[in-house]
Length: 327
Image 1: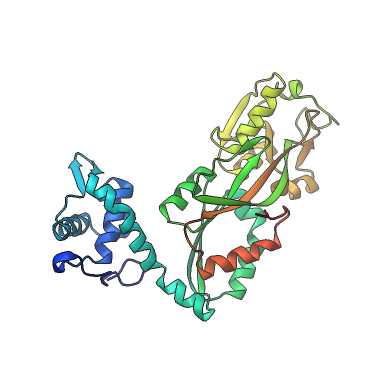
Image 2: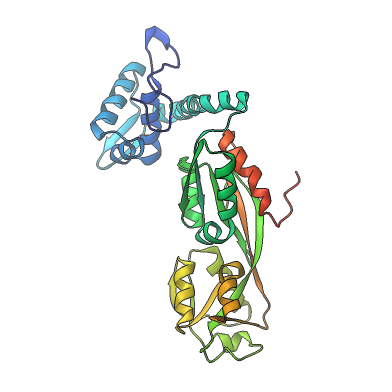
């Protein structure tokens, strides 16, 4: 039985010298162990038992007459032979997995499964119309969305568990570290608002200085997020240290805590538009100026987008408010 989402792995990429045959399933397991440095983690990734992975690797080593891993303790490491074999194995697995997409591309057919990742705010406030249009136009595609932070999404791109990621590219003067071979295209730019509840002492102030704002506790994102780093940098540029009352990853949680008067929030404007209209939240005019943040679409440049991914990229033009990059 093939790995879920892949063609049957029982095919052989070819005979090696001396009549040895190496199957794609064994190569997939080898790549998983090499990436995870663990037989147990690799088994979870490919969806089989750990003994099955261990047996397949042992047979592969026997067929190649080479030891691919040094096994010691809970983690394993590649031998020099394993290091030299890894890129070739990765390429064979990739080419094998890409065969159905190549055929669909040639036939002009869009089907299968699309795995994407987005940040919380993007998925809730920016992408719903794209999801709806995509489902209507491409009913033969099963779309799976993972909602996490930018750093986690980039790791998942590297692991190839997702094909596309809508991430925070920049906030203020802070820019996400998008390493090669990934590419990231600007997509959507919006303001970040400082907000309080209508009962907060600052709610009736038309303008406020950053030193005054620093006297009040902030409810904001966790320290590793780009948005939070931009907020901290803004305060420090003006000689102030923000007083963090609470930090969390969920913009919805931040919004609710600000609404009940527990502190000053910093959130993307689109995510609080309804609350500002209703009067539940009051935006503050901060003399230090406005912060902006930019979302972008990231992918692995080494990987030819599947027809399903190409279709999704095309629909993103509906929400783009940043000019696409011209090479």
